[in-house]
Image (cartoon, rainbow, N blue to C red; front, top):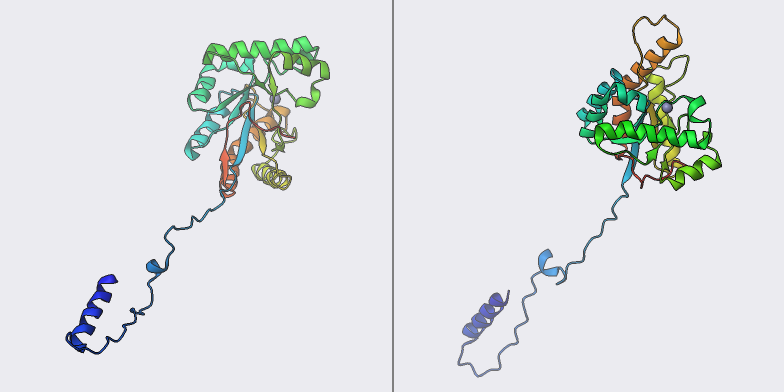
Length: 273
Ligand SMILES: [Zn+2]
């Protein structure tokens, strides 16, 4: 723009005649409108867009590893490129060590869910509970190289008395519960649609409380799937597991649409309640 101004000055000088003794007419600086770039302040103001807080969700699958269902769940998680956590039983690890190895190799979380899940044994005393966790950790360590300190009490943490909690705390164990129940253990059988509905409703409730959802589902304990009489407990159990696997893609897509990040449980996982 300065050159244009000089050019105009020179033009003015020539037109008026360089030798004209009359005082030169003061030339107003050019008044063309400023372009947007010229109008901009020297230091651009930074526009700060507040980052949305990371919305985490924890998918958890209990009572495996299962030779039939866990693999199907892992396939779905892999297809969506997401992670989950598996609350495993020592008794099932000993039957299906390869399934636990796959859980670990694919980057999912591992939660200690006791050795036997047998309530009579697990809850017979604080020491018995601790022994169950230690025994499960021995099974985990045989496959992965080390045990885990995060545990989920069979049936939930309300089964733990003060004395047990204190003993577990002394041994560095961290309890993890859940706050969204898929209700996929309904003894009367539960459909895929009902599981999807249960989880969606639970997620919305937890969101309204401003909490991080921890979803409870089951890959299930090891069973003999053959010869289950229709309507029997075993038939309903199989039906529930199949409903859960069928429901999983819809649950994942619902969570993805709501911008959730699928996290793996660790010592920083916020308490369910
Ligand atoms: Zn369980």
